[in-house]
Length: 187
Ligand SMILES: Cc1cc2nc3c(=O)[nH]c(=O)nc-3n(C[C@H](O)[C@H](O)[C@H](O)COP(=O)(O)O)c2cc1C
Image (cartoon, rainbow, N blue to C red; front, side, top):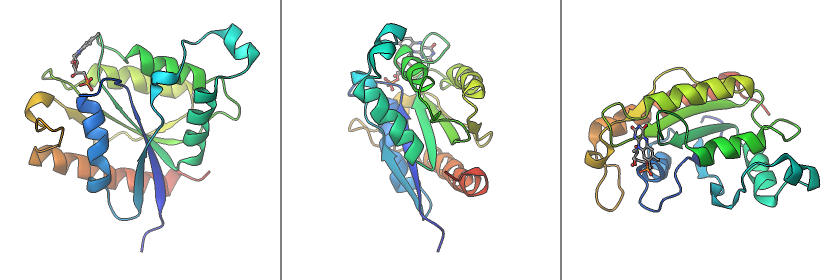
């Protein structure tokens, strides 16, 4: 039986009807044996980054998220694309986490998924996020990539991932990520 690994999902959308949040919720059922997928605390409690606030002490939601990342064997970002890039709330959270010591993302296996109503599925946000993760020294899975394009056609009205091909693509990435974590992870 494979070793049990805990994977944290961090969603870049705050809205209740989010396709990305729905995608993140679908992951536990699509994961291979031994991969336990849990949602991070929401990003909505994290204030805008301000070095003066940091100087007075890291806000509790920041330290909680940083600790959740440190404790996880891997992280999956599930995010929309805003204006060809990473949503501000996600970038803001990453900026806060980047100031913590020990660095939560250093050497951490990471995978990326995006869902968008466009035909490109959020690919431009993914490549900007990859660039940011270089500086954080994260270990990012290259392939398979998961871009859920035309998301409005892939989920039911109740937010269930119903598209069979997408479910198979996601399963393939999670299986690859499990192997990646086993190979490169290690807290
Ligand atoms: C401020 C803003 C900017 C957006 N920019 C893009 C974009 O650059 N590319 C894209 O594919 N979709 C863009 N969209 C559309 C989002 O992909 C769409 O709203 C998606 O449903 C958001 O993800 P969510 O459902 O998880 O909230 C944008 C939406 C907003 C609100």
